[in-house]
Length: 508
Image 1: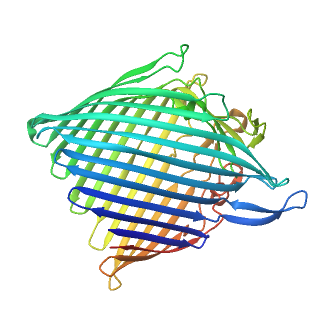
Image 2 (image 1 turned 180 degrees about the vertical axis):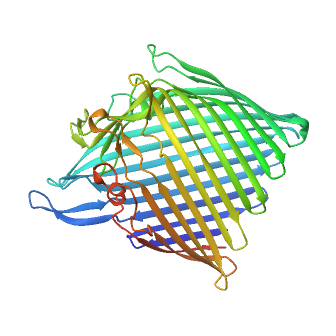
Image 3 (image 1 turned 180 degrees about the horizontal axis):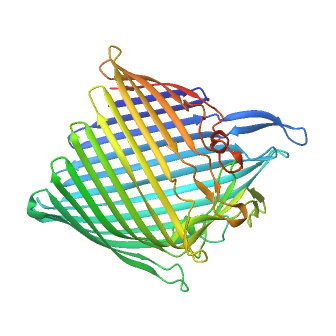
């Protein structure tokens, strides 16, 4: 099989992807790749010294990816081997004196295997390796020089082995172990940082009475993070979970679950120094003193399909979290000295990973979906709140980690006679809290309102699709400005306005 897709947009963006596959009863091979190039928006400017410079009003971006898969299906199970490569470069301008070039190169691969042990048991597992080389280079426009501001090299390995067994028609047992190692090298410290975490888990799916009406799924997991040094204490936690599913009628499904969560800090949260691309220029710092995050989570959901093609869903959640890991602003602006390169780096806001003593998140969503012969509609309304308990004020105060209200609407119509499909997508988010520091008040983003329209037509027995799209159809129209009067266009850097795209895909 062969597939390819090509897109060209009015904002000087090109996107292409391709897939080549071969399949037989026992062996399958595939190769896929993609390339995304965005020239950004360059404005000729002169700096304070009168020098002509290319200023990136909108960052330029280039991304490429490639993935290869090979699978062998034998009498006892399946074996799959895969490898992948991703590469990206982003160029942006901070001001008339300097800019940044951010580069990421990701390489990895893995192996998965499943082995059937008779009619009632299955042994399966996987192993993956990933490495990421992340670099940020400061470009000095005045002296036409470049200096390395950040250089980070990540290596992650993970393996898992699972044993599934159905001793009875009403029970399905799962046992498993997992181990992963993260490693990080950076110009910001002298030696490699690493962590190893192992886990064991067990779960039973009980189909009560084997009637497919009521299912009970209890589970237990044990996580253990090995200490990095003799001075560091080991981190471990035993966490239970319980899920219930009840189908009281053919078209009604009810779900209820409880789970105790545990999350040890990642290497990024402990040590990473990350520079958010210009024009925002945020500095995000890791924190080696972070404590693990524990939580108690409750979820409920109901799905009702009163008529064919129509579904109504409602869901809600509540999480109580101790030592929640958040990025909190501790300064509004400043600069930092790179201890390795000696380069002075400016930032507009500094964020530090921190523990919030007691926190809660709660919310839910309501969704409607309809699929007819020519018309399909869907709508989702979501509400969410995250708060941290303030010991001084003795109440929960809002955290900058969640959008309070979101609306997503989709409509698609297959036009008679033309037999083309027109699809409209509308998204709206309320302003999101940015900064909770007392000195700056409670800073918020503007609201976000976006509409996209896509018209497509299938030809030659659905082997060829041609389409046109209009992105940012409302041309940055929105309702609420952010702190300091920032608009959606200003805050999100949507300087291209309405974007027109033409594309096509071919398969055979």
